Image (cartoon, rainbow, N blue to C red):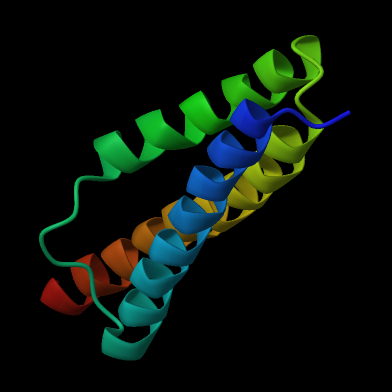
Length: 93
């Protein structure tokens, strides 16, 4: 049975997924990384992974599955930051 708290939290997770997706889209479109802290992005990726364990422990399955989308998109974002960051560094040399 889904609780309203699970549904509300899952809704915030879905909102985070959409927001991070727009960040990914922007990096791909611009093909460069500017004004983004990779450390902060890695931290929030790790937090998202922790949330998956925590939500399953609480039996909050809507939060779990919507949180899983955050982890997937955030992992893609970290990859894009590394990829385009290295690409920019190689152009400088």
